[in-house]
Amino acid sequence: MGRWRPPTQAGSKYITREGERRLRAELEHLWSVERPAVTLAVAEAAAQGDRSENAEYTYGKRRLREIDSRVRFLRKRLDGMVVVDQPPVDRSRVFFGAWVEVEDESGSATRHRLVGPDEHDQQPDYISMDGPLGRALMGKRLDDEVSLETPRGHRRLVITAIDYD
Image 1 (cartoon, one colour):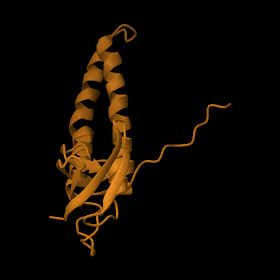
Image 2: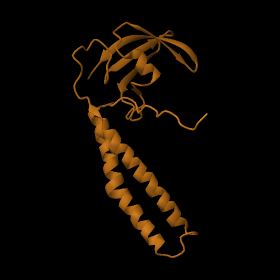
Image 3: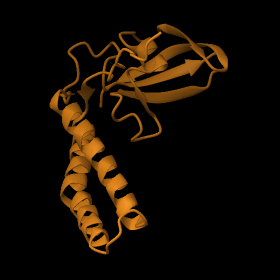
Image 4: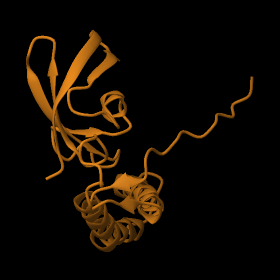
C-alpha cells in the first residue's frame, strides 16, 4: 500500500460577513505586524554568529514557517469564499445563517446558529453546517424531527424555532 492519500475536503465555502472580516483581519495582522517583527528578530539572531546553537534563530525560523503557512491557507481560503449576507427567500426552512432552536426528548431546548466551518469557533452557540448536527438540520422545517448519532448515543431533536435575524 502506498503513502498517497486523497486530499481532505476543505469544507463549505460559505461565510458570514463577520466571519470574513475576522479572517481578513487575521491575515492582515499576520502579514503586516507579526511577520515583520519575527523577521527582524531572526535577522538579529542570525547576526549573533553561530546559527546551529542559536535557539532564537531556530525558533524564529520555525515561527516564520508557521506564519507563512497560515497566510497561504487564509489567502487560498478567502479567495474562493462566498459571503452570505442576505437571508434566503424561504425563511421557513433551515439554511446557512439560520438561528435554530431545538428541543430534545427531555424537553431541554438549545439554540444554535448554522455557520461555515471557518467561523463555528467564534461563539459557543455557533455550529458548522458541515458538522453532524448542521447537516441534519439543513433544509428542515419547523416541527420537523431530526435524528443523529452522537458519541453519547442516538439523539432525537425537534425544531421549535427558525430565525434569520
